Length: 268
Image (tube, rainbow, N blue to C red; front, top):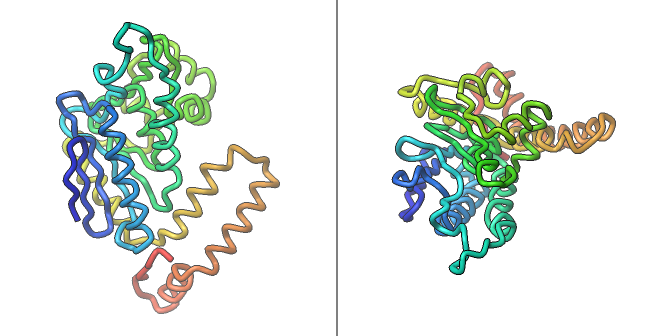
């Protein structure tokens, strides 16, 4: 299934949806049209998750960059030179985008093929697994414009890195290499540039054949764990484990183990 759009590419094959930001001449920076098309694509992913045709989402960028954040030539100042309400753009576009990615009941993989700056960096970090090309980099570029990290940056960075490194990245806006990001635990893995998409593709196909119902519960438990104390989180684990135990995937997994065969998970 292929969907023709202006600013993104979207295709589904073997249960893997691949969403490619496709404004390479602008380093795939966001404009209003791209946000509209992203909403459409993620709606298709949700429909595919419901009917079983989509079991993993891969997010990447076309050309030499992943995403350079907001396209400042698209809408950065009002015609009279007065500043626009950037908070309105966050509320309309970036907040729902992060929440939509986090709410998907399937694994979401970012394949960062080049620079990921500003909102582009934090969209990648909002995914469940982040693979980066060795030449890729992450830049919290907001401070250069007198802004704060948005798109979940002020929530994600201190939780992954602690306040010292989060503040260093946010205030200084320095480039963080993919290899340093991996060493700091900001991303999952760095791979050679030429191997990025083949590596991500193999992982995506592996996950697409797995127990995606259980994956969804694992995502929910881990992403929300920082909002709770230990006792409350243990209760969540109990409830989600009960749900997993009632799933078709669990029954199939046990049956396959007993029969010494490969399981055929359905994601239910």
